[in-house]
Length: 114
Length: 111
Image 1 (cartoon, each protein chain N blue to C red):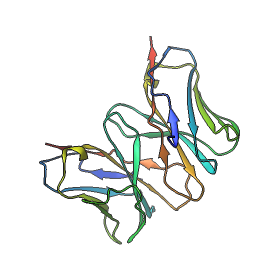
Image 2: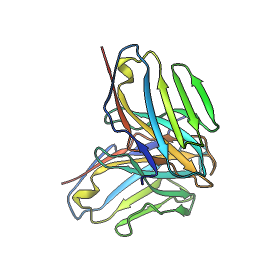
Image 3: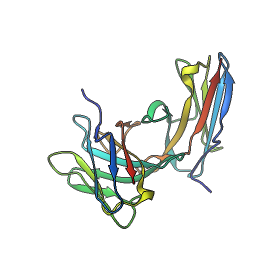
Image 4: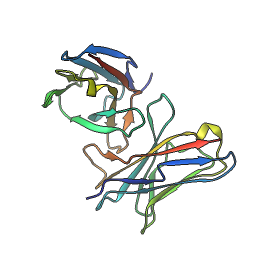
């Protein structure tokens, strides 16, 4: 049973480009969470999604960031017009349901904006 | 006041000693508490969870929770160099599903 799969592992974008990060949850999991970790900082919650629904996006920056979890396919975190400050590790996790007992993170996508 | 606070360290302990990592949280309705280990450049790995007051042991790890003091700790017995990592405390409050993390404590186990 494969774990949470994220790709790409590393992504380099020039300022102003778009970044798309993908997350495939564990088999049978319908809840996905995205976190961001800036260098030398802890993980910060960004967004919580269920299939075709955004449940909590209280941690998402108001502009340039969006997330989706379609009925079919992976969850996508999209960052438009990237800036240097977006350089970070982005981690995805999944769970079976809303109440959980500690979820497992994917290996992350390390975004570098040059 | 930060929601989850940890001493950033580094905490240095000799091999074989007990490492004690501490965490305080501000939200009194917090219900679930977790410790994650993160090696440099890697993703966080869940190592312990605790939901009720008292101690919970798993191998060399013991998690301790005191809800009255809003305090959770992790003890690592017989510390090994491979335990050298950053340890993240995480909390879920009320009916929320999102984890709130502390900034982590860096542990160094010396030979």
